[in-house]
Length: 233
Image 1 (cartoon, rainbow, N blue to C red):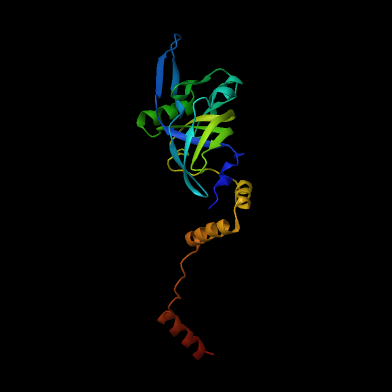
Image 2 (cartoon, helix red, strand yellow):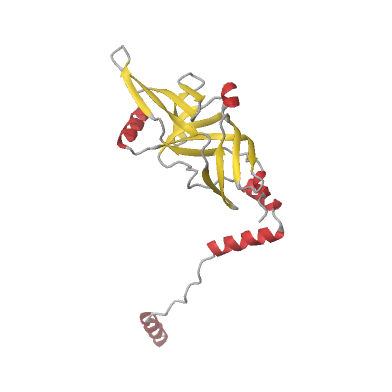
């Protein structure tokens, strides 16, 4: 199969998650009788390969060091969310969310409002161990594939209007496939040769064609009822 179609840069938001690393939820007195709550952790780890899967099979992906440098320097507007949705709990625009890239990856520090019921629910879920991953939503702006299209290096991303999230079951790179919309899938298929399209079709047909159903056996009760109706005519 010709894998060169993988070189097309995706135009939709991408999501990747990683198990909690350096995650801490710190509480300290506010000085006014209350408390302040600060979340820290890594939304992405760089220079570590993980397995992805797309329409052509599996490949290795690596977010390279420096991928966040440009978007952070441009003041990307990024919210801190739970499961990539819901109410914004912190935001770079307001200064309550601070993002930085270091030698480990994309470091996240968020000032959370402990009086918010959404923050209270997140705090409870973290303390119970019900959520244990971080994730980030982004757009790929620069990428590079190996000559055999078996490894994808993400060189630069845009986080503007994306997000960083605490997630329970994220789009884990080790288990989840790349996201494609119908238009992008059609573009990939157009780049394939006729033989490759046939191979892909046969693969999908084998996976999704249901097994033939056996013909139902007429019940004796049904036959007896039919005879009675004929006798009553």
